[in-house]
Amino acid sequence: MTADTASPFSPKVIAPGEGKTVMLFGVRFRYKVETADSGGTLAVMEVEIPPRTLVKPHNHTREDEFSLVLEGTVGVRVGDQELAAGPGSYLVKPRRTPHAMWNATSVPASRTAAPMQLPRSAARREVAGETRVSAGAGVDMSSLPMGQHCGGCQAVK
Image 1 (cartoon, one colour):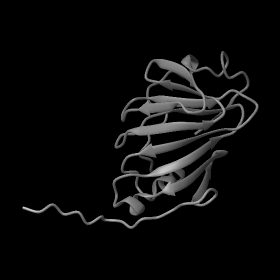
Image 2 (cartoon, rainbow, N blue to C red; image 1 turned 120 degrees about the vertical axis):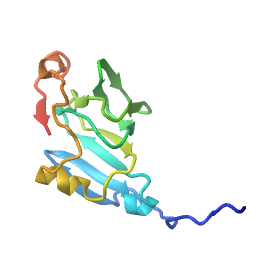
Image 3 (cartoon, helix red, strand yellow; image 1 turned 30 degrees about the vertical axis):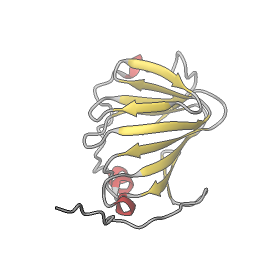
């Protein structure tokens, strides 16, 4: 028996500043690896959260999400855990687990996100309201850091 070692996709280099960019509610998503680039197994994007911005609670029903904070500080609530993540920190957000993120500072924060099996049309579907993300996700908004840690944050999503 021989293993099939043929890759379903070709090697590729995505330079800084390259990739399809989508703006949703003031947050910039730059797709670096789309599912079509990886044979449908992975997507990777850069996400920039503007100063004083809260990404409302939501969850992903079909994929786990892994993020690496590149710059700034990202506040995050995953389930009932609340933490601050600086550059070099990894965030693990399992599927069906409510999570929210925020940038309480006066400078942009950025992170990479690698959700598994993200549909190529996810951003278009989210804008159209046919979303794979459950906004609200059963998280009480009063339990989020808008007042306590994110004084004056504007909610998005």
